[in-house]
Length: 488
Image (cartoon, rainbow, N blue to C red; front, side, top):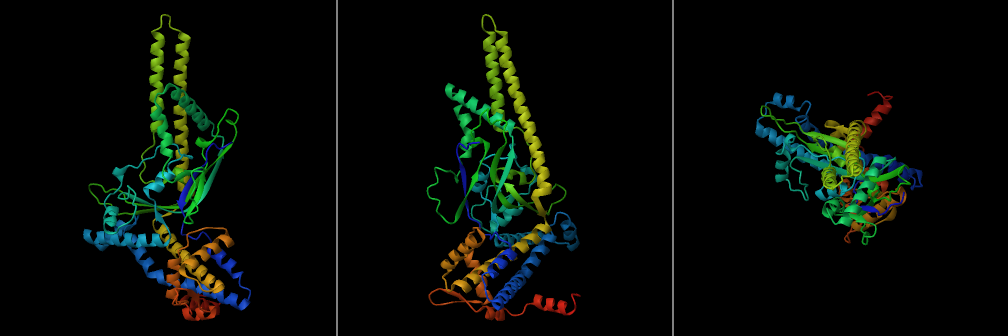
């Protein structure tokens, strides 16, 4: 099926390195010819990971301890046992959120802004029902108090009720017949054509298309300055932008939608009159299509007809009523014409009802899929995943930076950044906005790089690097286990 107009979404490039640590080390080791150097490099990679884990150990312990007090399942009981005052509980809440936001930042998660959400929801994919949040069921004090004390740039409008973190960009494809959706588009285009001729209701019909022309949603003929290395482009292929005819109405069609690879939603439910709810919900989702991201919103209202459907519904009723009244006022009312008009109106009402029922069934299917396929974890499980994610990202940044300095020699911070991104692209065919500042800071803390007067960094010898880091506790434990034939 021919695409009438390409819709390209321009998104800021992610800082996360989308490569498994094991794959990274395996590939980099392949560039080292000497067996002894290869062994030293593998030892260095392990010692880097063990050391970084030790650095974060206390911070992660604090995070898990604070959350245990606000776990929706068991937190209330622990708070009651400790007999804390409301002021002390408020302080612990803010301590947890401070640790949590630090971990999210280190994991390269970003708070979804209003602009990004507008871009994401500017199209349609599988979910075609208006999904809204029931604000009365969400607490508005917890996050408001945190952001009042901790300034963040470009907070979304709903930041006082819930926060959506996102990381990673992917692509989702769906192939189906989409017969009712195609019929709906054909009817909409036909009505639009008639109404344009009549010069009536033009503003109502263009409202939907104008909503799709959001900021940062650039068509292919509008993209003129996209050489910026800090952004990447993903294409959205939807039915609205395709040529639809009677010939391809019954054929299968593939649509494409960019996805947020990981989404984490944080919120608290509102308290009752008799008891204050202290539980903090942390939910983790994967591979959520941008146009359907309403599916992860907390405390959703039951969906109904879209505003556009109501406009078509009422507009058709008015037009049908006018047509019937006009025909009845004729000297000899043509009953067949009246019957045809009424049948058309009833048929259109039936179409709207069928489309609504289909959309409702799709919504229920997506909710079920969200529970079993898309939701990775919640609460403590999500926090454990985040802690491991921080370590994995930090380790990969340090290993790549050290390897570049070891193989390619001295480099300024800017050159090192470019070389690391180039390595990731050439060896793994992946792209990211490499966080060179964080990597250099870790290398300097480890003491395995030096900086000269010109601002150029260089690595120490690999064997010397292993000596500087020294034998780690994990290595001692592993040696003891090996000597004891694996017994603890």
